[in-house]
Amino acid sequence: MSQNDTDNRITYEIQDRICLIGLNRADKRNAFDSHMISQLSEALTQYDHDDSLRCALIFAHGEHFTAGLDLMELQDKWDKGAFEFNNDEIDPWGISGKLRSKPVVVAVQGTCFTAGIELMLNSDVVIASDNCNFAQMEVQRGIMPFGGATVRFIAAAGWQKAMPYLLTGKAFDAQTADRLGLVSEVVANGEEYKRALTLAQEICQSAPLGVQALLSSAQDASRSGTAAALANIHSYLPPLFHSEDAKEGAMAMVERRAANFKGR
Image (cartoon, rainbow, N blue to C red; front, side, top):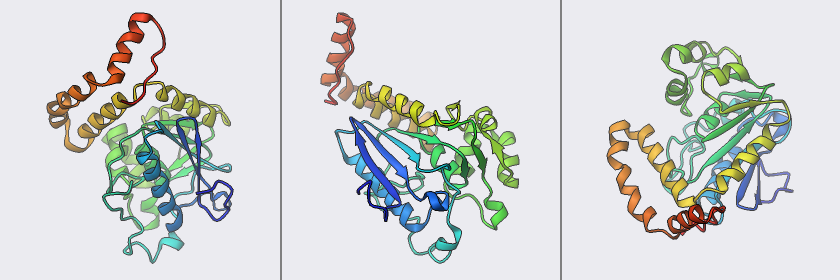
């Protein structure tokens, strides 16, 4: 995908070891139509398969992160595969398809409705501008959230804190999102991308095999429960302890220097 192709709903750029994925439908407040959904999945799949990349940053072109789903464009596509992903594709909302193996950071600003909230809830780090306006308003449109909010919003905020927003679709601001545990940090308007990029760069300094194992273990807990995740933790250790990166990490500690991890 070319960043300069205006037909693309998604931009894709590589900066060092970071994959920059931009929502690029600013004239429609970055509302997700079927093409944008497909292209976002393609971008995330490409990132996940590229061994040279260690972190992805999803951001939005324009003033708003996303107005949610383009319901008019998607109206006749609900049952035609617009939200179906095969075992080789990354589902941006983590409902089906291939399980993501590498971290994703998200920077949000302005309007962030419905599918946008669910997209960030399926990420690992969320930096929000203090001008954000959130709403999980599907019940006001005759439907229900189906990108993970019925599980992840409640898991993050708790039943009693989440349900008033899910059952009514009422709006809330960045400070409320922070209090509900939906975002990692709130920063001044205009600083969200810079802060998210800094965190992505910091993640890239960590041992990639360790990061991927950590992420997989955390996914075990969210998908299979605490007991299953705890029972599986030790299975990650043998390949990590025998890796070149583990040796490099130990030497870096002894020599009091920054480690240079290779992902091997």
